[in-house]
Length: 363
Ligand SMILES: [Ca+2]
Image (cartoon, rainbow, N blue to C red; front, side):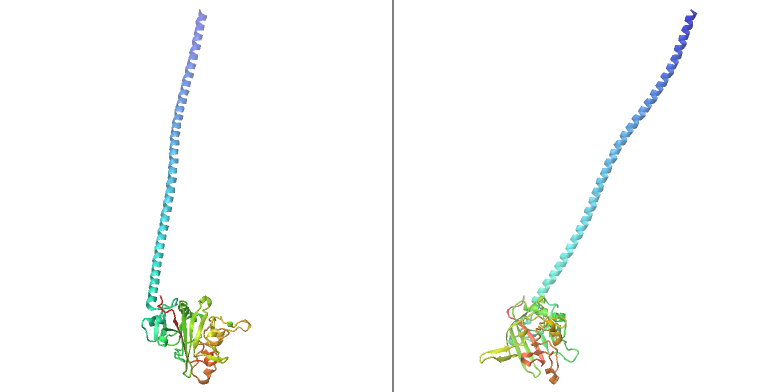
């Protein structure tokens, strides 16, 4: 009995001990479970937070994308603005150009109007009723100047002659004397004083004679007061590219030799026809036919500017010599017309004058 009681007690103690241990373990396990649950909840919260963060990240990505888009749009806008500015500037430039063109056009129209109103040569003026020889202003085509002052001969053969060269009217031996030893550029543009002596200018000559057929009349006076003339029914000069080449034909007049070859035929020697098809030369531009080993500059040797060949039979732009007795008859570089006064006698006065044969107003 006692053993049974003892056994019972022992069993009871054992069970109580195990129960306590199990209870403790159970409590511990519960605590652990609770802790794990807490951690799980925390993790769930973290995941939730992360999900939210991820969602926010997507939003940020979208926002960045939007910002990039806006930036691009802004850049495009800037480009458009700049393009608009460039376009506007071009519009202003074009407008300015149009204004300038209009202004130039107005000037051209004004220029043409002036030329129509003021006429190109003395025949235009003669046809308008100007019948007194003297000074006039004309507007040759392509002139270097807005208007060119010339002497018009309104007397000979009905008038209308534009004088392109004049010698012997100046005050020689004074400061008003016109020097004809001039440069190429001066002969191209013209020089002198229209009320005294002058050269009309090669470019003015070209501007007139390229428009219609012209005739040329040369009047000459020697120191004995005798007058002669040479007339050419065809006269014009070439362009600057052709160095203002002379074209002169169909001569008549009183300043030439008539050399009898037979009883019926005479050879007429004219001093200017020799220069037909010669180019113009000056002391600073040698275009003459004297070249090769013995090359000399005829203009430098004989003075003035002229259509020298090899070298000359006339030179109305030679050096002017005053009435000094015999000496003026011994000048190779004087104002020469070989077929009348020979090789050495310088003339007293000369006039070269031209008139169009087209018979209508210029322009
Ligand atoms: Ca030469």
